[in-house]
Image (cartoon, rainbow, N blue to C red; front, side, top):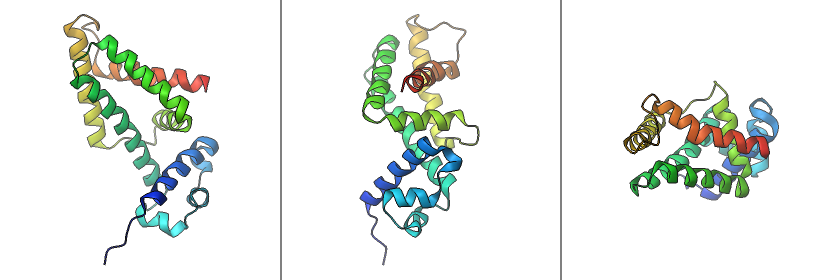
Length: 167
């Protein structure tokens, strides 16, 4: 018989992992400290993740997916690039206000070369950035000499860096 997954425990694990990584750094956060902070047995954590790296990569993937979903909702409403930038920056500031460790976590993980997004997530981000670029170039808000990488950096990484400097 399949074991029941306690979503509350998983949420506590995710929050504890984000908190530990932000407060102690990746190297300072351990599976045992994450489990202790989440109030779960270490074995419970290992049921879902073979190690810390897999857990952190999963959390980074979830976090970026959340941002991608928000951007996709904006693009589906076919609003201007200027409106998208304002809404996205507002989204990041709201996240910083209500979940500051999440913003710090995303920024720290994207800044470290040892962590990477899943291929699916990278492709999703490229496609969304390409759509923003295309929309911006169509109405003249973005010059023809820019690519989707610059769009991602300017729309996501620069606001996150600014927020992190001020948190």
